[in-house]
Image (tube, rainbow, N blue to C red; front, side, top):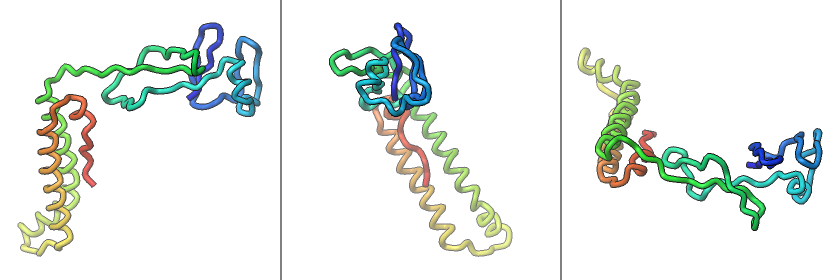
Length: 161
């Protein structure tokens, strides 16, 4: 990420902009070809996110701060807070996990219905896949239940392969 500091106004870019106007002039169609020294002269600096930043559990400072020693802008992070209790967050994650599992199981539910209605055997790969989904849910539910921090519950990966 890059940031342009122009007379106190900050503009954020995903990369060096091709064209821009700075306090020392305009660059039209060649910004990406400028050297690092030229970019700094125009007020274009690197913009850094804090180590370990995760938007699910952190907030960023409203505006980045300039580090004059390293000639970069840095965001700072703070931990998010949740109004739900730890138990409520766990329940929400477990319910979402079970919903995902239900969707996966629905893909093969017709085998189960066919077995119940017509006594047609269920292929072993289907029973194995369904058992794996159920086992994964049990494991993940236990892991979620064991978590002790809200942030860990929020970022827990509930995806079922």
